[in-house]
Length: 287
Image (tube, rainbow, N blue to C red; front, side, top):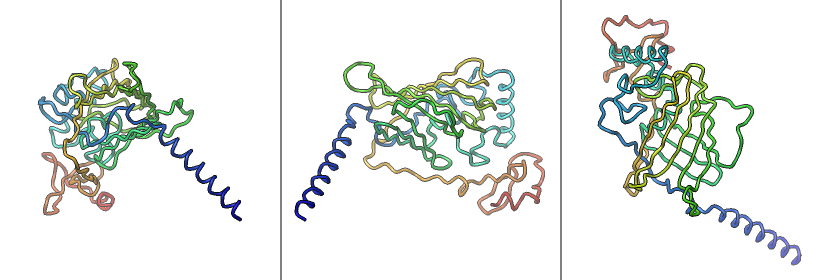
């Protein structure tokens, strides 16, 4: 009996040792320190955050759209001027913003780095999250498209000093409807977007994190590259605020018409001369 117990103890110690060795293989000092809470940098360009943060939103983005999708953007902006939501679906339908709009970081962002996967979490509209696989896998043959897409990344040591300073990511297999910003900047309806990212710290300001995003999409005449930036919240214990779009939004879509629910629970129009709601859809809208 003593012999058997000794064997069991040795087996347990060996298993524990192997576990600790595997855990110790992840040297987090080799990776970018992306801990904490990250807040999107907002430049004083006017309006809500556009896909290109250096330019005003809407038509001021001067996006390289094809004529067909330039018309989609113009219609979205015109509808918003008239009180509607335009092409921005998170507002009216509580749909997630999807990629790459998610990386505008409309709310606080959290990044968790593990050796085989990096998680990106942003509490906007609902609990939005990305998984960036860095385990060397190839693209799977079949993928269910999602708003966040399927992301494969690789860590790069550009300085050859034994530490990674760059995370390159490519995202495919997206679904819609999606748009790039609250003005309703469109992507193509075929959802064949390819998104390439370079995530790195600023060389002159180590507290500033950059995400260089290149969007390749058939709604545009060429690849569109923008640079988004984030600063770490300096508080020791920053608070992540939960956002429940369906539970807090005052927008109510009845049929194809969008209305507004006032503070005293009255249904209000969102644009001039808006027809009264079609009550056939009212119960469906309340669900």
